[in-house]
Amino acid sequence: MKLKSILSAGVFGLTLFGLAAAGLCLPDRDSSDAERRKLAQRPAFTGEALLSGTYADDLETYLLDQFPLRDGFRAMKAWWQLGVYRQKDNNGIYIVDGSVCKLDKALLPAQVRAMLDKTNHVYDSYLQGMNVHFAVIPDKNYFAAAANGYPAMDYGEMDRLLAGGLNDAIRYHGMAPFEELTLDDYYRTDLHWRQERLESVVDRLAETMDFTPPDWSGFARTEYSPFYGAYCGQAALNVGHDTLVTLENDATDVSVVTGAEFAGEKAVYDAADRDHPDLYDLYLGGAQAILTVENPNGTTGRELILFRDSFGSSLAPLLLDSYDKITLIDLRYVAADYVGQFVEFSDQDVLFLYNAGLVNAGMLLK
Image (cartoon, rainbow, N blue to C red; front, side, top):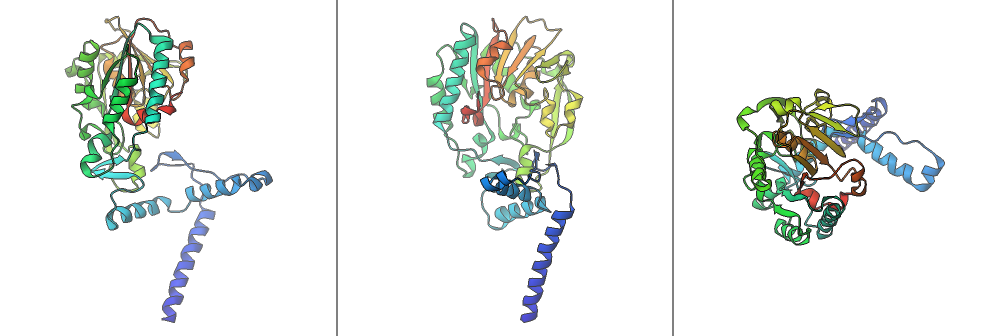
């Protein structure tokens, strides 16, 4: 018994010593491929930081981020939670029919009202007399949460708040343009919808906003694999990967993208964006405050202003047969009061298009 105790203590001590030695010897990592984020670096030691307590907090974050075998321990913990304890989620991540989902907060009326206030302010500032529409993209929880016993946001109440709070001149469509979507139309390892599955979405928007949809037979597909979505690393489990597809036709091939955050022009699907940590950035270069996409061969004479989140990046290329010019505005990255300095508003069509998660976090809009 005594020998067993000694051996147990020895193994435990060697494990601690080995991990500590590895932490000292191994170089710090700049980022985590699994979590697709920057990792904390060793904080600078100063008397001021020590006395204020920030050094201890920063050091703790650094040690957690740079812990040896960190990804392996994360995977072990997730497997134990879901496979052994049979918990329904691990840190808000759950899996339904092979699709990785992330639980959202309960409906936050104050956040929805913030979205309403910002939208109405934008309308009053720039859009009066224009053809303005507002629609909400359902998130994955809309399809997966309640049906599988997980807490779900009250989407009905969100709809009522939006319908009753928007300026009367804004045509509100709720989630109606997306009623044919299913969980399969979203990436298994990511929150976003799949561009190659958006034909019904574009056709419904065309009916709603009175534009001509593209000829779907004219699109060619290019596949990029593997695509590890945002939820892949957060799940900390071997959930496989997705294949990202881009749809190209004559309009996407000739259109050019310009923006204030980069010099010159880019292609709709720019080769340089394939090297981003998030392959979804292949759609128009990822998160940008204001982008303009122009089809020099366009013949419709119509323009669209799209107030959007990241879902709009993969939708906009599919509208380049319908609109000669599309301006995408992300109010998470540019304050509404400054938009008029970069965008000329005249007689364009306007679409506010946000996923339900962002509607429930409306205070993120500037």
